[in-house]
Length: 299
Image (cartoon, rainbow, N blue to C red; front, side):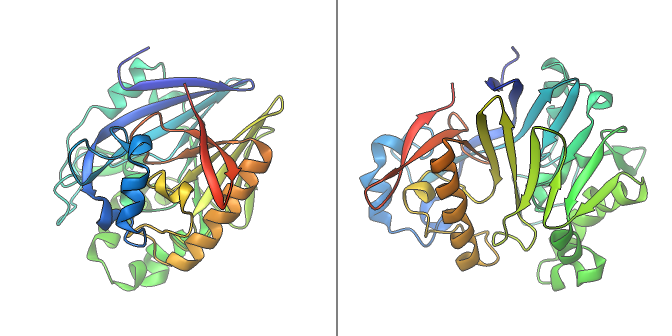
């Protein structure tokens, strides 16, 4: 298996993790401002070095895509940052040049092989590789894929919602280079409430982080996983689900949704698969005294 790829099975479904970037990012107190600094210290043995840098104060995070393969179908969950984007104010993402598509191909996934692209929400680090530059024009990176877009986010971040009300000029840039071209190509499927992809996969609304944030549920041969996007940025939010990230547009609703999703995951023994964990990337949770515990990390 190629570098920067993790692989495991959930029933008959192969799950691949393709990293675009991983490393120390923002200070932990900035990433999860609702979390008491003492919490990070209390769980240091579970957080360092995979989720907090050793001897430092920055959270270790990843930008990545999850690939699901079963029955001849290939599904991508979120598409990272992308190359050549105008992202002023974000030096990590601005005009980035990386080899993500090459990493996908080395893992055996060619662009033409992709059947479905799931955007759990429409933030810039989840939609970037929806498109690629072709002689100055943004076109879909995956020419045969259906792109599943949550309706509430498509409205909020698109022109109908004034590009999120114009609060962040970057939202217009993100929508125009990474979402609008998919609509123009006729490959967008805008869904609301819930959407079944196939016998193994169903999307469900999970609002709070953004109006249209969603989770993708996977079930195969009695095994389960839930891809939770940005409901979680750090394991401290499993240990303390009341703590929302600095990126949540509605922190209170995000916390309510996070608690509900974690409760079900613990009851069903489902593997929780967030978008940005810097370590193993996926974890089983269990109910513990007063909350949840990190039970077992994916191989």
